[in-house]
Image 1 (spheres, rainbow over the protein chains, first blue to last red):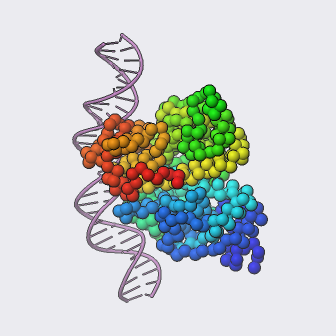
Image 2 (tube, rainbow over the protein chains, first blue to last red):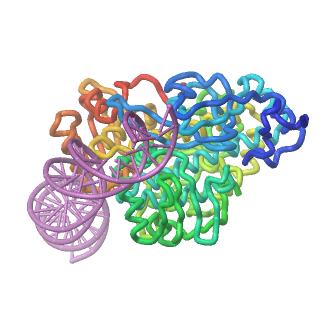
Image 3 (cartoon, rainbow over the protein chains, first blue to last red):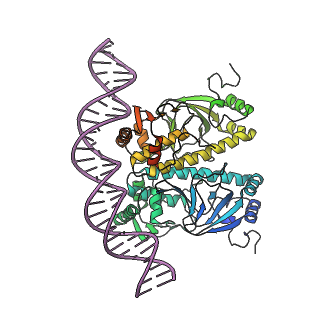
Length: 248
Length: 248
DNA sequence: CGGCAAATTGAAGTATTTCAACGTCGGTGG
DNA sequence: CCACCGACGTTGAAATACTTCAATTTGCCG
């Protein structure tokens, strides 16, 4: 078994976006220190108001960052996928709950140990900061999408965001002959909570887009984008096929 | 004139939230290095896609962070007020435009010089990171607010956010005998763009809250909150009168 | 093959958008 | 000093989109 691999899990930090450019020593240290934790779909990783006593890096699957309102409504404010970093806070307390949207694997580090690594490897520190700034831009993009009054435009914006952000992540986005195939890692209900609406409206929006010929619904969670420009027009964005990723 | 003050402007970093706890040497260095720039309401500070070639700290007034969509719609994804830091990016390019929502003063630093200060004063570096994490939480709070389907609930959420975030900032929030007085630093149109709706709906929501007796509209931009609990219930939040600020 | 969860569809009710008109405030110029 | 103008806010009424509730379908797993 290779010394670069993490304790025989078959997963390696070198394969994670936002870590792939790190120096070999830093990668080796990360792999050596990480412990792989597995969450089942629906499981809670961290409760609202709970202290983040560890730092995590998503190895596979998707987590949702959410807040539960007093009347039981849920609001999802972001998704974390492969390569995203959890628990980079200063005070450690999270205003949001973290739950596994799908089965997920997370590399976990004791907080003190991770901070030691940050001190030891300046480029890791830099990568973490980049990740945070990245998240900030993502959150703002999400605001723009959710601010649209028309649900169909929000769904269009969401699909484009998937293209931009989840490219190269676990085959969630695959460019093919007939268009761009997108695997949506969350349910219709989650999507509704993410886009500030109800599952029925999400369903209707997808089928309206399909009737327009903009997309094909291969399966509820598998969408083929046939006309990127049409979606971009609805989302009010530039037509950005697949070039340009989050981190320049 | 005191040597601690910035070049005779009468403004001092010691008076800014998120800087007030810095060591005197750091404060002195900031005051010495800063140049005060004045923007008029409506003026553009930075265009979408433009490079952030400076770092700024808001000394007074309010700036809006926004994106203009292709069809001319605007979406405001955040407001910057006293103490907020502009231009803490790594690649420097901004996906959003920055405009002055009111007349505003900004301390500006050449990027290289600011980074030198960060290296020299670790607690400044820490304060900057805290500011970024703060912004991330603010953006997520904004998503929760905008995700609500009822406009009146969004307005309630906005007012509570003003209480939480803008407390102690330029008298925007004043607790008094009859309730909490809030000075809204942006127009109805901006508020509509911030909350994902139209100015007419904002107006109707304010007056509906007033008819309920939850608020008094002293002036279009001056709201007296008479029943925090009622607003909190609408926003789906805990009843958090005025305790607890963003940064613990 | 039965049972369950998720997704979809239909129809009625409701809230918001849209368009148009009116009111208000502050500044400018006669 | 007053009248006018323009920007901003408010109000009304009709059109539209979404939510809500109920029922049906689909797909998956035992």
